[in-house]
Length: 140
Ligand SMILES: *[C@@H]1O[C@H](CO)[C@@H](O)[C@H](O)[C@H]1NC(C)=O
Ligand SMILES: *[C@@H]1O[C@H](CO)[C@@H](O)[C@H](O)[C@H]1NC(C)=O
Image 1 (tube, rainbow, N blue to C red):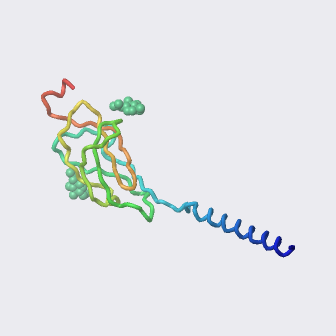
Image 2 (cartoon, protein in one colour):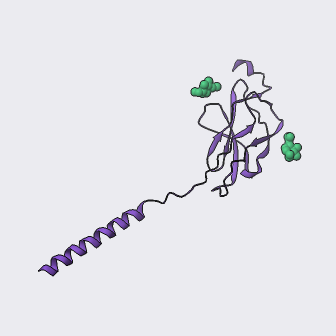
Image 3 (cartoon, rainbow, N blue to C red):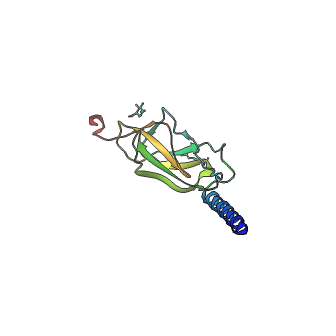
């Protein structure tokens, strides 16, 4: 009887340990994700682009981690404070290049624009201006 109790106690103890071990292994390991969110340097606040011009968009890679989850970059254009980024200016480049040449698309003027650099995650740059010409620009 004594043996059975001791055995049961021991078994319960082991089972408890196993349960804890399982619980511990279910918790994801907090590894370094190395998300790289390089800030856009150009265009900056006050920049004016004109339709059809070509410009080098540049960003700061000085804080780049050694391991980057996704090095493939994409640059999109959107109006300031809009949550959609419908215009793709460049894609498929290496985010460590720190610059990519883009052509200014024909968009409505009278709005502030911003670029978003996508890689590991999206990062909006400063607001800047794109100028026409469109005969309706003054009506917007
Ligand atoms: C963009 O930068 C590259 C490399 O410095 C240069 O060859 C090219 O002329 C630049 N493009 C523009 C539009 O300034
Ligand atoms: C964008 O949002 C910021 C912060 O809410 C605001 O200060 C700014 O005026 C907005 N700009 C435009 C063009 O709506």
